[in-house]
Amino acid sequence: MVAARHERTPSDEVLDFLLSQPTPEQIIHLRASDWAQERLRYLLDGSRENTLNDAERAELEAYLQLDNLVARLKIRAHEKLAGRT
Image (cartoon, rainbow, N blue to C red):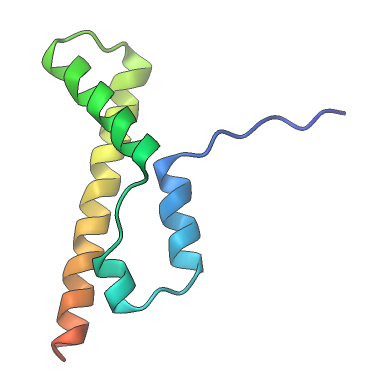
């Protein structure tokens, strides 16, 4: 039996990062990989031009939700470093 190939996603990147037990400083400096940034640029351009198919629109929505989660993580990391948690 051949195992199905699993494409890495930005969510996979964030999950792997969180499993590494990052410090607050590392969370603050978390950035999307080059390929993830390029994919997001493609999806945002397609959204502006109204050329995305349903799957691409769903992918873009998932990226935006993930971006919101990472932004909230960074806020919490800043708070932790400032001694507010």
